[in-house]
Amino acid sequence: GAKMAAWARGVRGLLLDISGVLYDSGGSGGGVPIAGSAEAVRKIKASGLKLRFCTNETQATREKFVKKLQGLGFDISVAEVTAPAPAACRLLKERGLRPHLLVHDDLVPEFAEIDKTNPNCVVVGDAAENFSYANVNEAFRVLIGLEKPVLISLGRGRYYKETDGLKLDVGAYMKALEYACDVEAEVVGKPAKAFFESALAEMGVPPQEAIMIGDDIVSDVGGAQQCGMRAVQVRTGKYRPCDENHPQVKPDAYVNNLAEAVDVILSQL
Amino acid sequence: GAKMAAWARGVRGLLLDISGVLYDSGGSGGGVPIAGSAEAVRKIKASGLKLRFCTNETQATREKFVKKLQGLGFDISVAEVTAPAPAACRLLKERGLRPHLLVHDDLVPEFAEIDKTNPNCVVVGDAAENFSYANVNEAFRVLIGLEKPVLISLGRGRYYKETDGLKLDVGAYMKALEYACDVEAEVVGKPAKAFFESALAEMGVPPQEAIMIGDDIVSDVGGAQQCGMRAVQVRTGKYRPCDENHPQVKPDAYVNNLAEAVDVILSQL
Image 1 (cartoon, rainbow over the protein chains, first blue to last red):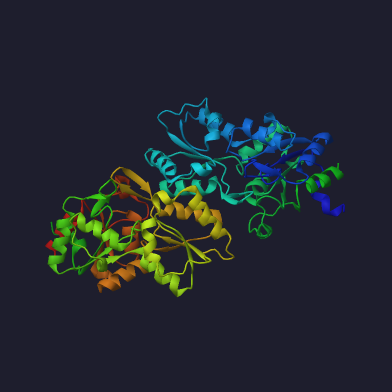
Image 2 (tube, chains in turn brown, blue):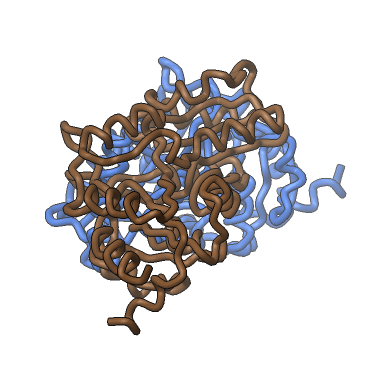
C-alpha cells in the first residue's frame, strides 16, 4: 500500500550491495543468483534510476568479480562497481604508504601499481584460506615492528554467508591485529562514510535521494544511514531474524529480497 | 641498596611465570633457558620460600611441558604448576558445558575426561599453527549457532616471544571470535583474579605476602596487582622498553631477569 512505501519515495539513485543481495557466494560455480535479482537489476536500468554497486568484496579484482557476476546472468560492468581496493590504493598513494598485504591472492593485482618494498603499514582484506597462522603472524610482526603502526582494513564485516555456511570476514582478523598491536584500524569500504560518499559522487546523486539496499545491518544499513541515505535490509544473504532487534540500527524498511525492493521503489516513481 | 629493595620485604611466597622468565620457547629443542634462571629456582627452593609456577601455557599438557623444562635443567614438577586447562575443566564440569576445542593438538589430552559431544561452548587456547582459517571458522560456526554463545579463553595474551621472533597469542583469536559473534569471552588463566587466587591458595600464602614475577606487563603484573599481590617485571622474554610507559600498569619493581629478582628477595629474608 501507499503508506507502507513512504520509504521508497523521491528516489533518484540506488546503491546495491552484491554478496547476499544479488547472489550467494561459494561452491564450485562461485555462487548462485538470488531468485529475481538479475531481473531486478535490469528493471532498475530500464527505469532511468541511477545505479551503483557498492561492495566490500575483496576476494578478487573487480574485473574477475564482475566477470563471475556476468556469468551468473547479471547486467553489470567494472565501471559501475565501488570497491575497497581501489579506494585503498588512492589512500596509500596520498599518504606515501607502502603496504604489507594480508589479502586474497586474487586481489593482489589491484595493488600492482603500489610500492610494496620495506612496508610501513599493513592492509588486511578478506583473505579467507590465506588467513593461516603463519600469514596472520607475519602481518602482526610487520605491524608491531613499526614505530607508528598503521593498519588499513578493507571493510570490517564480521561474517558473510556462502552456499555451504557462514564464513568469518575481514573484521575478525582486523580485530585480532588491532588487539595484538594495540592499534585502531582505518577502515576503507563500508561502513566508512567516505566510501559511501565516493559511491554517491560517482553516481551523481545526493544522499537524501539515494537508497542503499543490503543484507548487512551494520555495514550496509547503519553505514548508509550515517551518511544521510535511506537504507533497506533484504531478508537474504547473511540476514538473520535477530537483526530486526539490533540495538543500534533500524532500517528504513525490510524487504524479502531485492526483487521486492525494486518493485516497490519503481511503483513510487 | 636497602631502599631500592622495599618491594622485596615480608615475602613468604613467589609465583613465577614460566615462558619468558625461566626460558624462551621455540626452535628445534623447544626453547632455551634464560641465563641464571635454573639456578634461581634452586635458590628459591633452598630458601624455604613457598613457590608456584603460574603459567598461561596451553601448547602442551602440563606433563609434557614440565618434562621439557626438566630437560632444560629446571627443578620443577607437575604438582607445582598452575595452568589454565585444568581450571577450565573444573569450570566446564561445574556448569555442564561441553566444549568445542580450538586448541593445540598437544593440549587435547587435558580435556580427556570432558564430554565434547554436541558442543554448547567453545574453548580457545594458544593453538598456534592450528589457528588455520578452517579451524577458526569451525569454532566461529559452533559459537554463532548457539542460542547463548559461551566462549572460554585460556588466557588473553596478545603475543609471546619465541627464539625466532614474536608470535600471536590466544588473545588475538579470542578477540576475533568475540567480534564475529558479538560475545565477551570468559578468561581462564592470567590475568583472571580467580586464577591468581587459586595459585595463592595452592601455595597457602595470602596475596600481601606474595610476589608475582613475570614478563607480561598486563597478564602477569597487572593481573597479580589486581589481586592484591606485588608484581615485578623482568626485562627478559616479551619485555619491551615501552612497557615501562604503560598507561595503566606500573610494576612494583623492574629487574633485569629472574636471577636478579631472586637475589634481591633472598637478601631481604
